[in-house]
Every structure is written in C-alpha cells, then in structure tokens.
Amino acid sequence: MFENYAKLLIQVGLHVKRNQIVVIQAPVEVYSFVEALSQEAFRAGAKDVIVRYRDEIISHHRYLYADDVEKVPSYVSDLYNQTAKKGACYLYLVGDDPNLMKDVDPKKFTNYRKAFRKDTAFYRHQLDFMHCQWCVAAVATRSWSKQIYGHEDTHRLWQDILRICHVDEKDPVDTWEKRKQQFEKRVDWINSLELRSLHYRNHLGTDLMVELPEHYRFAGGNSLLIDGTSYFANIPTEEIFAAPLKKGIQGKLVASMPLSHQGTLIKDFWFQFKDGKVIDFDAKEGKQVLAEILSTDAGSSYIGEIALVPYDSPISNYHQIFYETLIDENASCHFAFGQSYPECIEKGLSMTSEELKEHGLNQSNIHVDFMVGTKDLQIEGKTRKGEEITIFQNGNFPWFD
Image 1: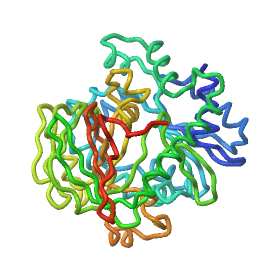
Image 2: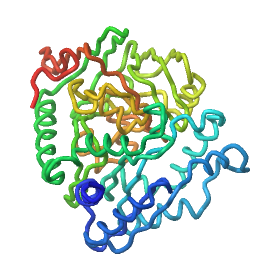
Image 3: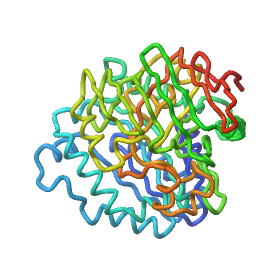
Image 4: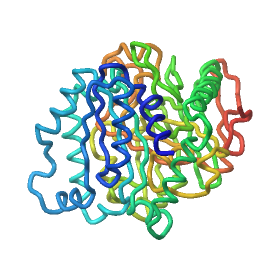
C-alpha cells in the first residue's frame, strides 16, 4: 500500500517531469517511506532527489534554547532559492505533534516565518505563480497518532491516511483522475454564476457577508503550471477555493474546529470583521497565538482565501479531528488569513503583487487556514445581476456529484 501512496504523490501530487529535481521535506521518523518516494521519483525520470529531514524534538530544543532562532541560515534559503531556479518540485510531508511547541514563545515562529518568506522570495514566487509544482501530504508518526487517538497507533493512522487519500482503491492514480473531473464540474458551475457576494450563516453564530472581486475565479482539485503540467498541491483535497475582496468582509465568523498552528492548539475562537479587517476576536485557548498571527504584517488581519468543502465528504464523515490543517480543512469549509492566490482572479498569474492589490486580493507573508463549516451551514450567493442563488444548504452544495 505504501508503494501505491508513493506512486500517487510522485505521479499525481507532484507529476514529476523528466530531469526535474525533487525536494522532499519530511519527519526523520518516516525514513522508510521517503526511500519509497525517492525510488518512485527516479523511476519517473527525476534528475535528483534532495531530502531535508526534520526531527521535531530537536526543533523544539532549538526554539527553546538557541540564539538567533528567528533568523534563516543562508544554507536553508539557498536550498529553496537555488533549486527553484533549476525548476525543482517540492513535496512537504506533515505529521508533527500538534502540541509540542506550546511552551515556545509564538513570536519566534512568527518572526521566523516572516524572515523565511523574505529570504526565499524567489522560491515563493515560483510556487505562487505556477512555475514549480508542490504538494503537501500526510505521514503517520508516533506523537501525532497519540494526539489523535489518545495512544500511539501509527498503524491505524497510516490506514486512515491511505483511506482518505483513496490509496486503498484499486488504482489510486485513475481514481484521482476521476476526482479531477468532479472538481472541474464544481469550479465551472460556480464561476459561471458571476457572483458579487456570499452570505454565511450557521448555529454557532457565524453571520458573515463576503464580497468577491470582479472577475473572480474559483479553483480546486488539480492546478496547472504555466507550461500546462497538472499537479495536486494538497493530497487529500476536497475543496474549491477563491480569494475574497480584501475590504469586502463584514460580520462575525466562528471557528467550528480547533486550529493546530506551529505546535499550539487554538480552541473555541471567533472574529468580528469590518471592511475586511478583524476588529475583535477571542479564543478560550491560544488567544496569544491568534494575536501573533493577526499582527504579523499589514495583510495578516485580512482574509486571503475562502474555501467550500461539503459537510458530507469523506474526511468529514470520519467525525474525527486530526489536529492537522491539511486534513481538517478538507473536512470543513474554511477561510485563511493572509496571502491570496493569484490564480483566483482572471489573468492573475500574469499580474504583479501591486496589480493584484489593485484588484482587491490580499497580500501577506502568512497563509493560515481555519475551519468554519458545520452541518447546518447556509451560504447564499448574490450575482452581479442581483439574483439570489443557494450555494450551500445544510452544509452541502444543493446538488452533489
């Protein structure tokens, strides 16, 4: 089964091209799976496979005790910038303990992320503007499984990961080709509506108006490089997503699930928006971490992404919190603070950052997703002609594939 998962990530997630460099970032605990990935990558014609392992315990010690922890070593930034210049693709394997960093000052993470994005600006540009493929996928580790199930059970977590990624089906590559067609159907439908705004409501207290920029574009499922290469940036994925008008959000938005952010759990939180900006917020746990997120830069207190995920979807039907955004965001409609995606506006991939701003898309050094979907979520759309259309009813599209 691991061989099929490796095949899926290399062939479908990244769609590795012949003579392309593959960069893998992974927990050291999953060394054997990385071996399977490297073998599959070389079979696909990769020129080289570069692996950057991380050990979460060592990372924890570093953030607690090391000097200059908020600076990015040149050998780190050079790795990403130099490989991006060579047209590399990037696989990020997630699976760390979501609670491990709770005793670390959150400012250290915020400052490091700001420095990393600044020092790897070329690499980020290549990813954001569709010059290099990237994929985020999950792997089972002991500490993560303990957080989910209450005891270490990597076997069970591997089985859950493989199932929600459809690896347990006869031919996962063929399955994901069919899923691509399902996403295309949803995207084509919502883009054809020429929406002006979306109104979100549910029993948690969410009552939010979201304006969309003119010539918005929902995307989802696979992505396309400018040379036409198809890849999936997230496996698993259940979302279609867009960018809101930066200053066009009004009302209250209540999170429906905890958020695990850089080793800290944030629970029971909400936001009040005016003209797109958070003017008030609270959380029962992790409020200081939220404050750090929102104060990162000028765009971090504005929304960069809205994503639609049916409540009746494979991950949601687990009725299980995984404490990992990659999976949890695909069980629920979600929003993201910070950076928007240029593909979410017509001709956005050919625009500069300033031009994207002029079209109402938020710019920031962060991108932090949080979940808002519920079983009773209602989303009503209003078109530019003034027509009202139900986008979500009882947590789902009014039609389903």
